Image 1: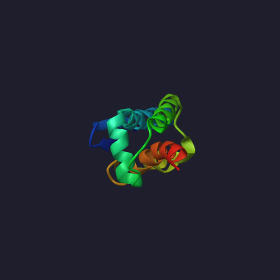
Image 2 (image 1 turned 90 degrees about the vertical axis):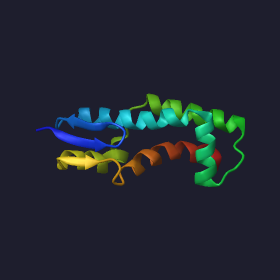
Image 3 (image 1 turned 90 degrees about the horizontal axis):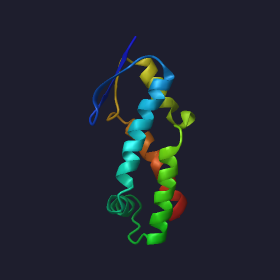
Length: 117
């Protein structure tokens, strides 16, 4: 049985019931978000708006970018994304814009918080 995952950026994506395919989908979405944050301008704007931290040093930016690149290359943390994996496996249709995107931001924000605070 195929599942349909609806996302604003990806349109409709058909997934079979296989968890590996779901993990690959999650990794693709996560890595697209990470790619956005690898743009230094976007990264600085986000840190300023989210954490009210106005002056991120170039050294911290480089450490954050290094951490993001490591996350980009890593496998998906199944425990972190378990609610989304379960939802995809359970429901025929889901939307990442219905609160699930928070999981992706939390994953990335863990890198920011490691170097900002």
